[in-house]
Amino acid sequence: MSRPDQADYMLRAAATDVGRLYKRQLVDLLDVREGHTVLDAGCGPGTDLPTLAERVGATGTVVGVDRDPAMLAQARERTRELPRVEIREGDVLDLPVDRGTVDRAKIDRVLMHVDDPAAALAQLHRVTRPGARVGLAEPDWDTLVVDAEDLETSRVFTRYTTAHVVRHATVGRSLARLAERAGFGVEAVLAHTPVFRDVEEADHTLGLGRNMEAAIAAGHVGPERGRRWFASLSQGAFFASFTLVTVVCSR
Ligand SMILES: C[S@@+](CC[C@H](N)C(=O)[O-])C[C@H]1O[C@@H](n2cnc3c(N)ncnc32)[C@H](O)[C@@H]1O
Figure 1 (cartoon, protein in one colour):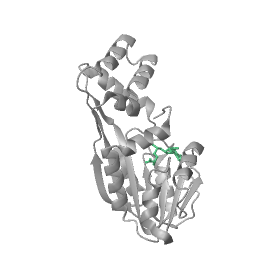
Figure 2 (cartoon, protein in one colour):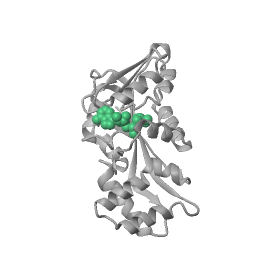
Figure 3 (cartoon, protein in one colour):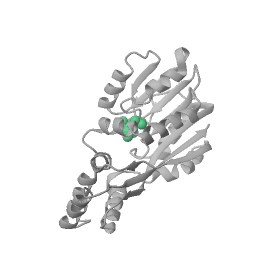
């Protein structure tokens, strides 16, 4: 999703209860061990790198790859005192990692943004060793529900988000199928449901006002109806949620 401060969004999302839970579960299921080489493809501001570094210990290596220099700067800052972490600039569609050198890899909320998710999975297959484990986590934005009396406009908002805001908005549901097609064996499939009860937090993460304005500008909903819908979200109890899918597979 395009947003003014990507890193801030990612850090806030990771700090929520569900954010912490699915990330911890993903790392636990990866079974990262002392001495492993672990890749975080699309590492963003490096949220997960310290945890991975702790698990690989003094003899392992953690490689964080991202294509965004601002993210890389934050990832470097976050891991400044962790000598086993290497940050590399690169694209997940052309990973700057040698063939068959990685024991564990994860890609978390990145595939929805890339040009070709299947090509990114093929890259993960290339860089991992036989027996490696790979963890994938992506939302499915078709499952975004926002409570409002004007249910139809909530549906318009979700449809606009999936069709125009996120490139591969429904990749979450396809992770297991894509992983199999890339040559991995699927070991576990889990789903988490982040719940938003605070409208400002939801607005920040889901772009409620921003994307509704874009939907209005593109003619998907009338200005009066769209803005009335957005204003109504601040009146009374608020609820929004979506599904985040995690898949752990083996090479
Ligand atoms: C939603 S953030 C997730 C960051 C991190 N995985 C996390 O869980 O906190 C998406 C990240 O993917 C990176 N990204 C998107 N497309 C990419 C690509 N083709 N190659 C490398 N990084 C990419 C973005 O720069 C951004 O840092």
